[in-house]
Length: 252
Ligand SMILES: NC(=O)c1ccc[n+]([C@@H]2O[C@H](COP(=O)([O-])OP(=O)(O)OC[C@H]3O[C@@H](n4cnc5c(N)ncnc54)[C@H](OP(=O)(O)O)[C@@H]3O)[C@@H](O)[C@H]2O)c1
Image 1 (cartoon, rainbow, N blue to C red):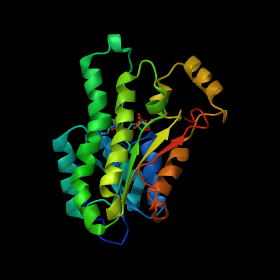
Image 2: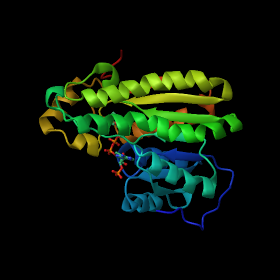
Image 3: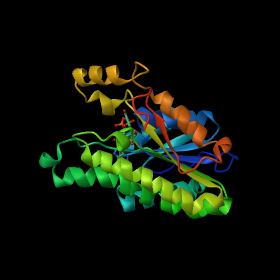
Image 4: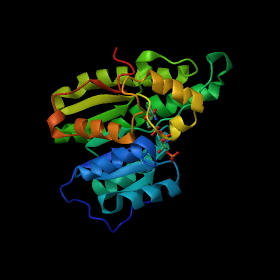
């Protein structure tokens, strides 16, 4: 999908890129950042998803296709963004997938898909935007991890490896670019009501709810609120951190 030509290029708003903004947590983050006054580019894996994002964001931004594990797709999306708006000063790496199975039964492609989509995408999506953030001496990078990065979770070794990798990556990049006014943080949601968790059996959901001290699953707004804070000017001294948002499920 090409970026529409009838929207204004420079109206003083900071540009925020949110990957995986068609639904769930990413859609809520895109809406929240738009409400905070950012111009938002939300990404999808299909033209239909991109059109849906454009409709949801209306004048506050638009959707385009970016497959975060595919270098050519990322480059193509960035070409469109740069031509139309310049490069983003806020990046929210939200796109993520699961392919759950015990390691003994896990297919190689399920390992590769999860690690490439969730973790290798950090390299592909962040690197092209870094120079511009350095020049601006301002940037906000927020990466979606998960509570299971620290807890571990049987049947999710691929997913947990990718999320634990994100947290280590976040701390390292934060140290590399802190002096340039760019912060890099992770947000680790607990059990949030989205399509991703809707795949679970009702019994699993009930058991999980019983383990959450807050007594409820999290909402997508719980996560969007934290991302909004980390993207703000006021969070300029917070970097390399992983913010746990899990209703008390895990406090380690
Ligand atoms: N839900 C939870 O309880 C929970 C807990 C902890 C962490 N998280 C993390 O939070 C993030 C969002 O989770 P969610 O539950 O909102 O997920 P979701 O409802 O399954 O949505 C996933 C999003 O990622 C996009 N996506 C999938 N594969 C992609 C690819 N290869 N390239 C680009 N985009 C891709 C999807 O786009 P399409 O619609 O176009 O496929 C969709 O917008 C993920 O990183 C997830 O690991 C979620």
